[in-house]
Image (cartoon, rainbow over all chains, first blue to last red; front, side, top):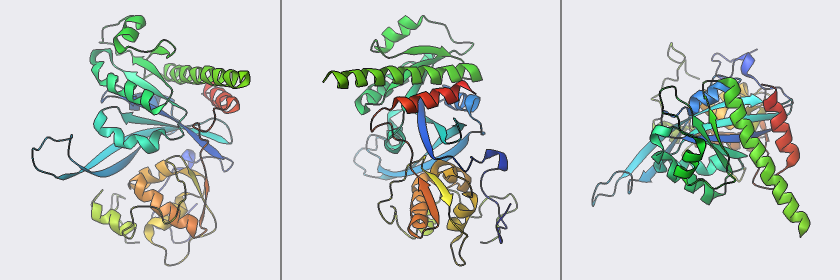
Length: 210
Length: 123
């Protein structure tokens, strides 16, 4: 159905529209390095084909490109893929994939504000990308779990070893997943939700003791 | 609205800063303090008025049902920051209603977490 004069139709296809009763959204962020499978995971569980939103930021290039003595400004464009899951008639979940490298952290402010939590997706062959991310999430107070994307050609390591290599605190869950698989990706999100649940229960208990 | 190129893409250079400047009439932040998040849902109220600019019109048309700022940004190929400015204009003019996200930073809510888990269990 087009409004009068709508010669160009931009927007969701009919099947991608939300029920009119949808009252609010929540979001979960999937963080990881390039090629780690963020968009694959989002695609596996999303009810819509993942969409891409871009953000540009003009910033002084200090610390980005080392151009000694020259103060320049660079226009950075970063794409974020995201998907959507309608949880019920009133609530919808958005899943954002965002790069973990430090130079993209400018994206994070709006992204993590109000987010339920994060899944840090890692590739055991490139653990080093993850260290900064984990530290930053802890600093930001964003609850997260770690999911090891099990690439077929990647060497398998016991989760305990990966936990130790990442210096991951005991309460933070670490799970294996196959980002290509819907059920596995869904279970990964469930693992995050269960963790959030235990955190909330702990907070509630602590409040009641006061 | 000028007719787009045959492939349905806008007929301006994608992401050109000058274009974004024009779209938002030179503003880089919303006209007033409307808290708009990536996942704030936008719903049209009423019909477009004559003389509206193409971007405002496009948002009104696509938001016949609830749509997040992020989705509007993706469909319009405009940065979220630009879309936020445009949506704030429409809020000011009473053309759209916005539905704020459930914020998890306030106080964790068991009911909310259960609703999310129930929803995930069904996919």
